[in-house]
Image (cartoon, rainbow, N blue to C red; front, side, top):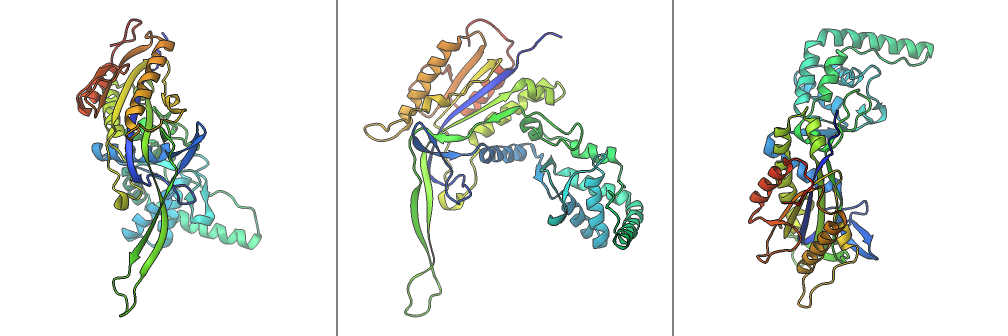
Length: 397
């Protein structure tokens, strides 16, 4: 078989965000990182990936769940259907026991949740509940036997023996291995079920401000509306922290891997690429949205279609951008991105560079970023068209 180089679609964004707390750490303060000797505000890739995933699932009306609660949710659904609580709990545990030869590992001290985080279509829950309904007589008999075995173990102090699987393993495993579009995009790690692992086609970087951005305090109070006569004051006093700045955001899609995940359906792969590109542009993490409303759009989106390997432009901002004389970081951030793109183009050449382009709020052209597109919709269309071009060794489009 001839070697086919991977096709990557790099997406870069310069995104101004006002006072916000998009992503908090364990200390409940905005996440940050030290880069180039100065502190930057940061939004983790996991945080923004979830925002993109939820938008994609809403667009496709195809929802997935990342959960350790599968056995408990099955038991809840069965109780709501009229099953006795003990039998429902036994059936929920049997779902994960029957998922493979040895069963999925669970945490007995936490109610039997799975040790590993599962990632599966939400619709699978109803199908697993229906499977339990079909095998209710076998589950009832197995629960009685399990109770008797437990009593024998307690009396004789014999060692524990794993409960046998009651539900058909092949059926349960097939349901847990089922995929959605977002699973094909972002991948799934589940070693306990053979064939459930999916290599992710999307790589998403931590977003960070292109300039120094220290957390800023916000002292606030909540007024007591029903205070006693003569009393003044607040029912709640706190100091929170927020950040501001221009974020550099980067993601790359391995279209070759995505097509492989879709069993070779290149048309569907390009469709998902277009949806992902739109979600990358428009999504916003939801943390503290009611008190900050940070609903801005990117100032600039740039794409590059490459063969063989992706290229991030994060190094353009290792030296922090200084604000302009009249204030503002955006204009100089655009200049830094443009200069770095030119340097990358000089170093790598155009042999594996298929196409590039951009869309920006500003009317003036931006050098070294390729074709200018008037709006986000045109850029998304251009990305999907360029992604389908054959590999070429000549100049880029």
